Length: 165
Image (tube, rainbow, N blue to C red; front, side, top):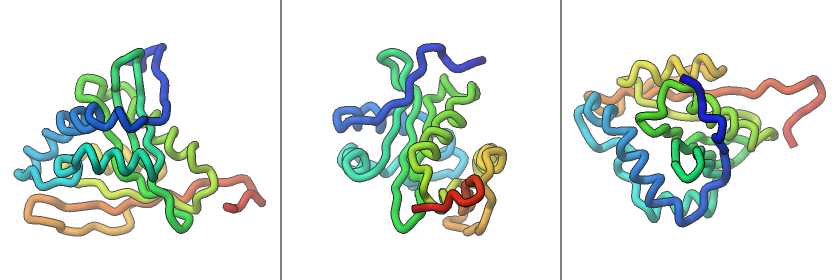
C-alpha cells in the first residue's frame, strides 16, 4: 500500500484537538491491551492538553482531503526536540505515513541538536521503526510491571560547517 496522492502534512489548529484525541485513543488501544493497562500517556491525555500542545509546540497533522490520518508533536527546549507523540490511524498504518510524519517534524526543526523520544517496548515494532530512521536506544527503564520504556535519541547529520544556531 502507498500513501494517498492527496496527502498533506499541515499544522494542526485548536479545533482539531477532539479529532486528534479520538484518533490517538483508537490507535493506542493495542498498546493498552499489550501493556494490560490504560495508564499510558496517549490514553490519559485530554482535549485541553492537546490544545495546549497546539498552542505551544509544533503539532502537525496528516490529511487526505478532509480525513485525519495521523499526527506528530514536537516540543523544542534547550536544543532538543522532544517527539511527544507520533500517531497514525489504525487503517492507515503500514503505508509509510509514520515515516513521513517523523521526517516532517525533523524538517520543521532543522536547527536542533538532537531529537528525543520515549516508546513502549511492549510494542515490538516501535523500537525497530525508530532504529530504521536513525534513532538509537540510550536507556531502557522498567516503568511498570508490563511497561518497559526505551529512551531514544537521534543527532541530525549536518553538512560540515552547518552547526545549530
